[in-house]
Amino acid sequence: MTAPALHGPPTATRALAAGAGRRFGWELLHDGQRNKGTAFTAEERAALGIEGLLPSGVSSVAQEVRRAYEAITRKSDSLEQYIGLAALQDRNEDLFYRVLIDHIEELLPVIYTPTVGRACQEFSHIFRQPRGVWITPEHEGRIDAILANVPHADVRLIVVTDNERILGLGDQGAGGMLIPVGKLALYTAAAGIPPTRTLAVSLDFGTDNPALLDDDLYLGWRHLRLRGERYEALVDEFVGAVKRRFPRALVQWEDFKTENALGLQERYRKVVPSFNDDTQGTGAVALAGLLTASRVTGTALQDHRVLIVGAGAAGIGVARQLREAMRAAGLEGEALFRAIALMDVDGLLVDTDVGLDASRQSFAWPPALVEKCGLALPGQRGRLEAVVRALKPTVLVGASGQAGLFRETAIRTMARAVDRPVILPLSNPTSHCEARPSDLLSWTQGRALVATGSPFPPLTYGGRKIRVGQINNVFIFPGVGLGVLVSEAREVTDAMFSAAAECLARETTDDDLLGGCLFPPVRRLRDMAARIAEAVVREARDSGVGRAIPDERIPAAVRAEMWSPGDPLPSLDETAGSGRPTAAGESA
Ligand code: NAI
Image 1 (cartoon, rainbow, N blue to C red):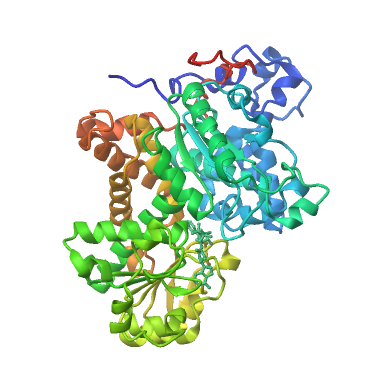
Image 2 (cartoon, protein in one colour; image 1 turned 30 degrees about the vertical axis):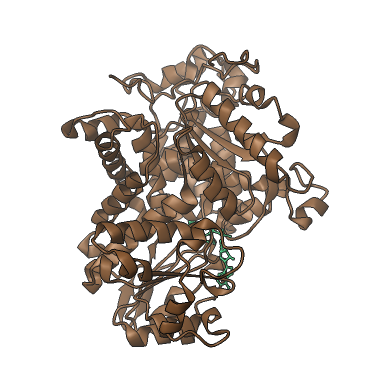
């Protein structure tokens, strides 16, 4: 079976893609997916009715990139840089991706964590151009018709949030939309998913954030959050509409609060190809970090003792992925169970705790085991330092969203029992990170192996220059998404995330490790996404959920689907239904 390409023939010229006979004159210059700005040649300007509408100088693409990059970086405030990049994306999408790909290391913190967090918080005050689709309870019964309004017919990748748990910043209402927008930009930059194949969705079912509800400029649906059966019915209607309108689409659930994140992931796993990045993507990136750290410490995976602080979507995702990997490495029974411990606000999870849901329950320790470890006294299991002293973890993961939670006493205690403590404060944005890498190194006399969710600049310790790795699911989701699309997998499996994690760990070189870094540099994102996609395609084939592509053809199949700036954009001239709803049951 030959899959229809995600994007058109690479030989077609950029001018044809830009013109396509549909847009002329002033309108063309204001169509971000066709506009080439000052790179339109004199011939194109004459043919397309834009002669005189641009200054006479014609720029090469390289000059355009230089000009756009200079315009962004002359702004000193990162939020202003974010706004400038968003405006560039609206004005000339091709140029936006050229700038982003060429400067990914520098611009990732702007379009993604930490700056995107500020942009979400300020959304109603910085709003200029819409991007994506906002679905509110007022659209009940009409969600299919709303999806018919999206500008492109053949959407293959949807990132959807209900805005309730944006990074570590909590409920951001309609502003949470900027997370799917940012993630999709990364899907395009890193994995070459054509922007015309992507859709950002905000399920704007209200907000419980009083500051937003009181802000007269707030742009979201100004009501308290919808919950319960009506919430579920609306999500159901949304998924049904996606299946009908975009039958080839992969859905990524993004930044839902824990219960919804875990619930939706399970509920729709077999209904529509889908995954939750906060649990599955984070679990995979943490496993990759542990695998690379193990190369330095010489500790086998199954010999680690892991303490995860924060039993939300991310913490549970990490715990699940690590338990599966340890099981696969041969650990079983009580030893497997004891290898991972989770703490939340009330301390170490214990299975007699009231109100534990099934996911937390499966990691909660029996009181007898807690007692055996020396945590019997009241209050002990609630103190990180006491838990660290009792459990002697080799790995400490932060997924709490609480800045400074990893205090000096706890870290020094950890470092007394372990030669090379692995410390992974995952929380974003930077202001919510559990500890600063410089502190972690100083409290452990430079012995800690550290990676953080948000980027930190390189640092020097004991004359050694150390590049702090970014332990972020941006290393995982672009490749997984691309692999799923290439293999046309009908389901996204946990094994795909294990394959992605192992691939990412292999991509970390000995040189990276010598520089103190557990992850490859961000500038290699595109290359890594392709490699991870290959691993996912192989896994999908082997487990029978994806196309049977022979090994030797997988790299070419993946590369063929990766759009690059300058390639024609697929389905640019097809609309999703020109605003007309399909008849019930009719396939779009
Ligand atoms: P969440 O809100 O679902 O979970 C946070 C959990 O931490 C909650 O269960 C909360 O009760 C607990 N917690 C809060 N204060 C605590 C304390 N003092 N001690 C112990 N536990 C405490 O949020 P989610 O989705 O799990 O994300 C958590 C953090 O991880 C966020 O900052 C998020 O940005 C970050 N994250 C990072 C990723 C990465 O790739 N680096 C990916 C996904 C999330």
